[in-house]
Image (cartoon, rainbow, N blue to C red; front, top):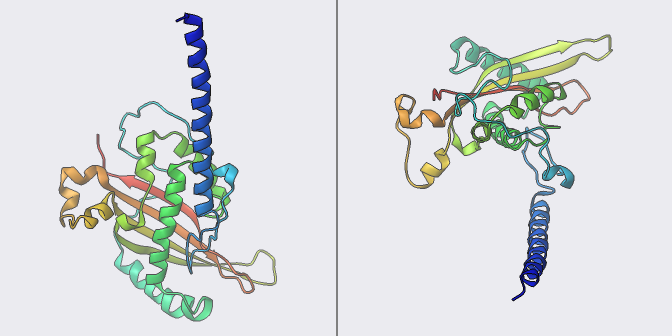
Length: 263
């Protein structure tokens, strides 16, 4: 057979195959958008009824492919903040007093710490997944910290970005480290009121999968080398405005992920 004829047939079939694949990919992407377009991400305490922008869904906003870091499984800090790991007895007592005698009777009579903690886990899942996929964080964190997060995440390797992604069911221990109440005047007739809650989460990547298979991690997992690459500690500080006449929503104004990987 003529060589030129063979080349022509291959070229024609390649174009048809490429067009076929492109149609499949576009169709799958549209189906995915339809499934999540008007989903409510968080309930009760964490607002975010989110309508996803189809132009943003497939776009990476700030990530780039980087070479392998010196410590591929070690996470550099996402923000400059001290790492909180364990509860403080004095702070826990203060948290209980603020919740019982100030926040609940004067700010929000439906507020309970257990409900807040559960809702905050879902918030961590949503924010961390969007961070790892380099997607927009608008409405989830305050605007001031977005440039810092984008800069830090853009320098991470693919392995490190995968470590950032947290599933709520992989959190095996969490607690409110500190609760704060702030008042500001700013030359207005109405005094502004804010509540801040700093949360600590201990994470074992893959915990949900282990439990679905009937397995439980050992109590001394922090001392076992096979778990070191899967353990993370996350700090998230939530803030909400409770000024009279304003329906504020919980957002994050500070966050960090840390692990103990040494290799």
